[in-house]
Length: 148
Image 1 (cartoon, rainbow, N blue to C red):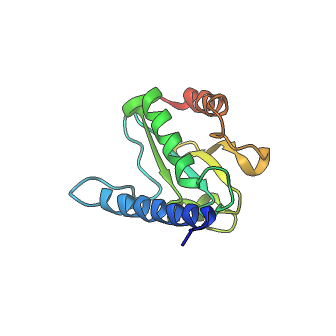
Image 2: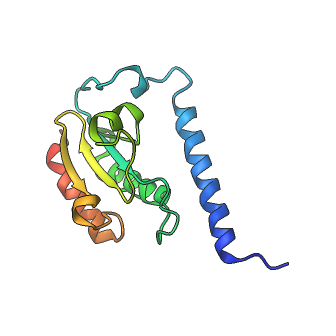
Image 3: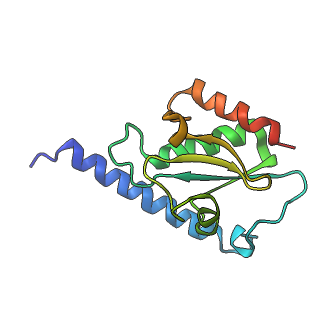
């Protein structure tokens, strides 16, 4: 009873996606402020808010979409600390930022919510900004001027 590596990878990806969604749902509970309270989001003193639209269905990608998002979260927290917040595939934001009102195939779009400026677009460049440490550093360098 050998299980194919493709089916194991698919199962791992599904579990990661489910856990990420559960964590996101749980973060909205417990009396904490949530972005869902208001859109467009109010500007908080000393905090820059970014929205990331990404393709949740990129099953054949070398790294799962959730891994990419987690990598961006960790790197941005390490570099900018409490000065940055990132929300991903937020339905109300997607209605504003995506021409189809949902995440798009092969997307990884980073937008400064308060200035409505597109910081990075994988759809325009064809390049994944978190594929390598050097690419991730370039993305963080593009985000840096907007951090207060």
